[in-house]
Image 1 (cartoon, rainbow, N blue to C red):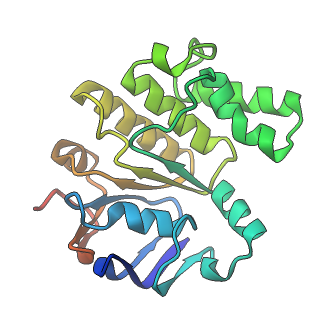
Image 2: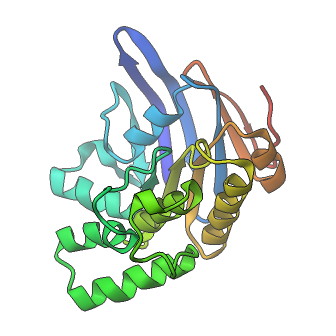
Image 3: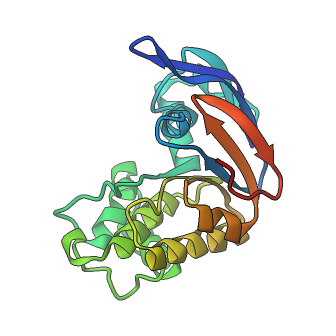
Length: 225
């Protein structure tokens, strides 16, 4: 599904991503590990076309995304959902409106939007929070809205960049359980985290980055420094 070949990205003369090769298969859930500065976020941003690599190629469903035209990149971002650590919700919009926003911009009919948004909010356990603003939500609830927003176009791949990084242990585990549920429903999940307990508990494939390089790929992984 997602294939990365010899990926390189530098900022101010420093290689943040240095020759990364990896492949994520359909229906997998994969943990991407590494300390701050390891290159996880930059790799994710390149995978969804938000940042262009200096070298290397990225394939999504066998298509080289570096060759995509602007309209094709927009389509790609609907097929790859992105969840950010800092939520990135619109403060002046309700949970419903935050999730509906992208569909509205795409020109979807209002009845289609309503049906899809309510279904997704129910999936993430927020059917009673549709009219709540971000300031009225807990950290865990806000992250669930962010996940719902990423799912609204039924992406084939969900990329979650440290989705539990700003949460307490209970909320972090609930978000992890939600990602596992989404994976079981058929969505491939690529999850960046440095949380030892989460990685050990899910016991799935683990890829580790250090100083921009891939240093290990374990099929049934546990956390390693």
